Length: 260
Image (cartoon, rainbow, N blue to C red):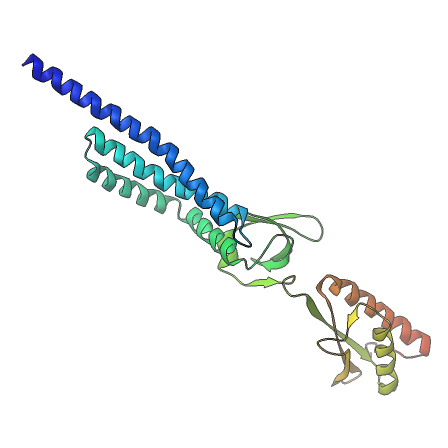
């Protein structure tokens, strides 16, 4: 009887030792295997470091679970029930952190499909600003007046995304109202002179455009459209309005004023 008990103790001790060894070696191999995968992915063009960190933790975590189950199985612990419990716990955690998980999945989509990138000026979630950081949970943006905006990634993916920086050029649309005493031909020539003197204004994909948009009750509305590089959009927009007003004053043209 004593020999049988001693043999069982030896047998179980050997199983436990092998199980611990499997976990120790498996943990090391999981880290090595994870690093190899991430290193291989990092050689691909446009690989995102944020996605790399996330994939690294996910792959390593999954491999660690497999190693742990193999170790427990070697020791003699029934892993079927353990997997069932683990699944139930995972479901409970998923329900408790549903909003967090939606931010994570949205963060993965942003990193993979890149509708927005760092340093781009965008409008998302009802706010606009320059993207400074994108992580798995949140996107950090800076407004024009230097305020920090932090958005959950889920709110970005679920709403409208306007990316003002993605295209190299943008069209500037301006409206000028003049009174009926002005000569339309002279007005158009004056505006075109201002536009042609600005080297920031492009002649592709279209030439500067000036045309009558509307004949109102007390004024004529002119539509002006020009193409510029995206980074020159606001500068051209504001300065052209000022230059046109100064040009009108110089040659005696008048903008429209409310009639009382």
